[in-house]
Length: 536
Ligand code: GLC
Image (tube, rainbow, N blue to C red; front, side, top):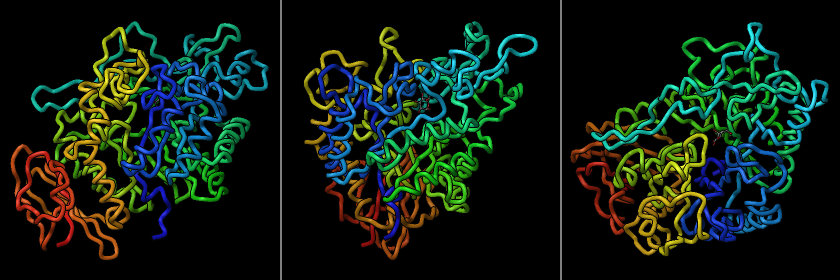
């Protein structure tokens, strides 16, 4: 098989603050990650993506970078990074870092210089504008993190859903901040502490490319590119239409300029040996649009596609998502990605509401056609932590999914005395230590699924075809060079018929402990479970 590694890999996202505390100060760090590498090898992941660990004032917990080429002391040093990278590579684990190109921190020296005077050579590195003719900000764009959505549990279905909340009419939700000293406004699609870089300035492109070379030369295998769809902007900065005026940064989404910038980026990556890759956070909730970011094989290697993450636990909804991906990505030769949880959204264990659905979802995620991304802790079935208002720290209300990972059963769960956020519910019994000893655990289920995937070319790279299936269920077939698997997922509250032509054996069942392997496939499927079948 000649596929590049990122097509067959399972990629595991680590939010460094929350993963593992190497120095016992209650905040996770790079040395903590290094010490858990053997656990990740045991689990069977192929690559890790590290959320930002660069120098940062932490207004957005590292997505506000003040030095792209150094490690924040809270996470360690560049030497710690090099050790982590070397030890990961020794174990065959690839390493992706998080590149934040749309904005820097307002404490980055580039911005400090830019705001120092209208004549500063770096003035045009950021987006500065005069007031609108009638006064006030240059346009009507809104910024992110203004409380425009929250997660709410529906008592009937048990699912947690994202609900739009109109912003507080008194809050300043605009995407512009007035700078007294130079008498102009600067643009920030996120916090005022995150000024947007102006990618039409060639020096910005050069500087950000230098950042990439710094890390690629050190040996990283690729990057996750933050908010990548927003870097190219219409220089006219037109107002949002009335219907979009409530949506943060809508006008700037999806400007053709971004595609040119991505082609330059791709050339930079292609000049390096060894299949270095870019996965882009294309936060456009439209798979047809996402498909465009693969270009003609000359833009992103992979693009996140978020509609499935926002899809409810319903067979018909998931069928549509799966069909959309094939319909839009196949024609452009885009290799799909699948993700259910990350550091920006309620975990899917919390969204779907039950352990059995989360187990079935694991089987679904790891058997679809494409590269799956796991978010650290989902393999433990963690729910979002309940955050008392006085403990909340994130301006975007995302603390719950960023709770520290419980490693051990003792009250500290492997962390320093005061972890930076509360632990998730049932941290002791969901700890990695407890689950490692229990073959019925979520952790062992993920391990079995990763092993099954690793052992099947059909699952890793094969075709995918949806088969006829009973109401409330989805059944699909994966195949490559005669290696075949069938997957059945029930989203139903009732037992459903499972009728697949041919003779099939169980390989993994989401509600079992591994002893099912090799048993005859059942004729029915239990509510909220999933089955992976192989030929008899
Ligand atoms: C992306 C990140 C998110 C961050 C934002 C601003 O959406 O995933 O965590 O807050 O970009 O950088």
